[in-house]
Every structure is written in structure tokens, then in C-alpha cells.
Image (cartoon, rainbow, N blue to C red; front, top):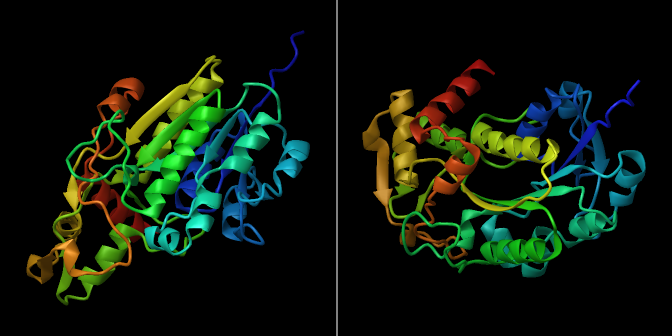
Length: 322
């Protein structure tokens, strides 16, 4: 009788965050085939998340110091896939404390822990950002120069370089704004579509930037990208070294995002006031146009992210039914 095949282990670092929770929910649905765990930085993991996903294990870990990773080795084992969602992702916070931004956003302790197993059996899927690009043209390609204008982008470029230098197997995902429904255990940070809906629902005039462009990606599309890469690796692929832009198909400004929310909700468009980003001092430089070309993504993984308008509708429908 053949020995039972080893169950594959997936670890989500920063699993209590926005993307992390959506990813864990998707992974938990495959729990009969996978052992799934996540790390959290807070004192205790969010109870609603543990209650909703009883098959998923939680470990406290500090990405800066590496404290907690040895306990994962002992209790969970070497993960076959590690998805790193943990970061200080608020640009202004990075600007105010560059050493903290570098210590958290460059995952040296995580990578060194994976290297300590002495084999090439782990794939690291790392979340990077569209803010690695300078923002002086439209539809950046992966091979374009990275020239970030703020500390957040700089820390993410340093992380990419570190991973490429150290890891045998990696997939680096340069993500745009991730939007979608709220998480199982609601996150503290403001979610873009929900925030715009809240502002516009009050019927008062509100200002939105007309001259900063991104390619927002629906959270379930980002999850599908991660699941696709994981599945390919777990099906016994020998080497993965991938860098991908992950955004939606639409290049939109904050103004156009607000107009989409208003169109779905039926709000009066006259309350939406178009302003330049230069009219507000946010305490941090922000790139003007970091829209991304996602041709490589769609060709490699055969995933076509949904349009921004459809994503807004799906987000607001989910909020209404929750």
C-alpha cells in the first residue's frame, strides 16, 4: 500500500490584514488538501477570523526580529508556499520613519528563516507595489526602470532586490490599489470604495484628484493570482522566478473611481468636485501615473481581472448583503 502523500503547507504572513484574510478564506476552502496557517503581529489573532476558519492555524511572529518563526518550524513545519502580505503600506508612515519601513518591508528575517531549511522546497510569493515606478508615463511594464518617488516605494524596491538575490523560487507581485468587500474580521484601515460611498452618500460636495492614475485590482482577482501561482508550484514545478504587474484592466483617477461609485449607487454627480493632487499637501510625494500593463499576467496565468465598474458593483453588492 502506497504511503499517504504529504499534505502541502501554506503560510500567509500578515494573514490578519485585508488581502491576508481574503486569501485565508479561499485557502480554507481547500483545507482537505492543504494545511494552512498565518502569522499576525498583534498580541492575539482576530477571534472572528479563527471562528470562521477553524481549520486555519495562527502564529504570532515579528517580521522585523524574526521572533516566532522557529515556533512555526517546530509546530507547523517548513511551508511549501509562503505568501508575504505584511508591510507598512501607508506611504506617509514610511516617510515619517524610514528605518521602520525598511525593517518591516524588506523581509530579511522571513527569507533567512526559509533559507535555514537548507533546500529549495519553498516558494515565496511576495506582495510588492505599483509605487516602485516613477509615475511619469502610462502603463508601466515589468522591465521598466524602478524609480520610486517616496520611501514606501524605495523600501519595496529594496525588498524585491533582496528576494531576487537570496531566493531560489519567488513570485513578486507588483500590486495596485486592492479593493473589494470588507474582511471576516473588519480591518481598521479605510477601504477605498466603502470610503467613497460613505462620503458621497452624505450628499455634500466632495473633492477627488483628477491627475493621479492607478489600475485598482479587485481583491478576488488578486487572490486568484496567488492561488494560481501556488497551484502551479505545488503540482511539482521545479523552479519559479516571476515578476508580475497585478492590476485591473482600467487606468483610473480618484475622480473616475468616485464617478463609478456614484453611477452604481445613483448619486448626483454634481457633488463630485474635480481637483488636482497638487492642491493638497499629504506630507509625502505621490507618483502621478503608475498605471500598469498587465499583458504578462493575462498571458502567463490566463487570468483577466474584472473591470473597475464591475468590481465596484460587486463590492457594494457584497456590502449590502453583509
